Image 1 (spheres, rainbow, N blue to C red):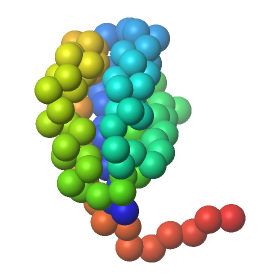
Image 2 (image 1 turned 120 degrees about the vertical axis):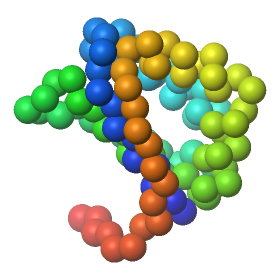
Image 3 (image 1 turned 90 degrees about the vertical axis):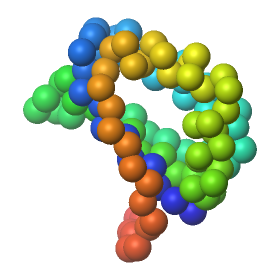
Image 4 (image 1 turned 90 degrees about the horizontal axis):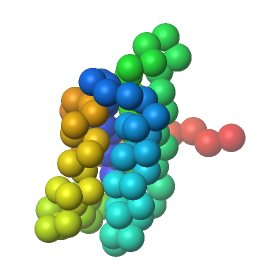
Length: 96
């Protein structure tokens, strides 16, 4: 399992961004390997969001992002926010 962390800095309307994110996420939910994700908005900086997604593998994530239809789904988000993402291997965790 890997963690994909993607930071967004809005350049557009928050409601439009969240709608575009949800539409892109709907596409990704249909791809093999996505386990779960959480989009969160920063309390002290409402133009900052972070998405934390768990995938079965880096290959599954890369395949989803390379899918020919992904660019069409992500286009709306790209017009509303700048983003920076990275893939991480979990090392330590806690769950209550």
